[in-house]
Length: 310
Length: 279
Image 1 (cartoon, rainbow over the protein chains, first blue to last red):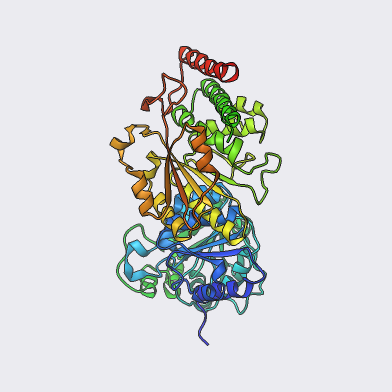
Image 2 (image 1 turned 45 degrees about the horizontal axis):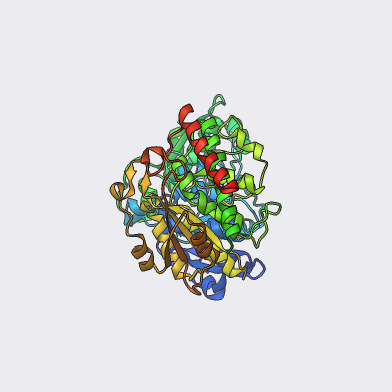
């Protein structure tokens, strides 16, 4: 059976939990189809609010619902949600501490060929700089499942980025001890520490397996929580290994690489390379083609790691 | 409504004006023009209309007040203190190092629902609160205070559309239409008029009143007769109302009174209070 996309998994978690979570309200901005929330909307119409194509309004309304006791999930395309409504996110959600989960769908380069207007490659940077706001991005359907189950129970604001298409599994199931703010070490290694987030985790893991064949021992860390950030694990592993490469579907500025660099900036004898999208508009291509073009796929990560360690 | 009620409101509003005048003078900062234009609206809401209990500020059935024009914080802090949400002595700390009250509403203080300050945020939030009220079959009302200059923010119109789409007759918004903003006349800066036609076109029930007439304020704030429309009250007001040197002057948007101006304004307000209480 083909994997579920992370969106579909989110829908499934909502459908399975809506009855026992009567204060759950899901908001969409003419985005229920792309969010794969049609089933949820049909099954629980009283727990869904459609706001139309109005991303500022979706966040404001979600904040008002949350302030009235609802668990509000505002689901809207990441490029618009994280940019058009960033001020509502800062003020109405983070500053006012309303229990709003902002789910940015079709994140990163999911809409690759649609151009920069539809890329969200700055969302980690802007959301990460806002106090009181968690920033999360799951690696696969299993992590999405356990992450959304956790989010149904927490009372703090969060931004969650999801990609559009199904991704290859990283995990076999969701019982691996997921915890918001706690990075997951997927593989041990001594020569280099590879850190991924979201859809790059699978690529990083593939690279580590290939590197093993070439005699390079790579540790792999999945940072699903950019905020709260697992400073301790990153520091410990980076200090032990000394060579760090971060890979993210995001601008090289302000995302995972930056978060790691901030943590390591006062450590000594650690080198870091940041792999991500460059500070320019991108060539045309599918998401897969862009990953390859800019060096985010497994094979490119292998080559870059070899260069880095040379 | 009785003449006594109206007189009590006038006295209360004058006390509020006096207190915030002093607060701004001492702090050396504040949005006096809008504080004074909206003081009668806010006083009527807090002292007659809204179902609120300062001892139980989180009551799920409470009426909600969202101050979208967050910058008129002094009138809100004063009103909340005089109503008993927190001790009046806190007003003395305004603008001081580590004061709990700042230049915009903050929900760290009891009685404040949401942090506002950036314009165009209040109405979307209010729509969310009104939808929640409908979902939960609670009969509270949501009151939103906006400015006419603020209407240049596009997010207001997203919210305006959604409020009528969801038939939110539990939402009553008020435009403190003092027709001035920081740069000058709203009509010249960015013309938000005509208000009635715009809001009617967006599906709202619209009334227009004198925003300093307590009997009109009481009548229109007390209920929304519509069963399927949000209500917009266009309150025609005078910026700087109550202190003659500030009335109708854009320059008083956030002007801080000099020593002489402070005394002159205080004398005027004291005279008004004297007439109201003994006249």
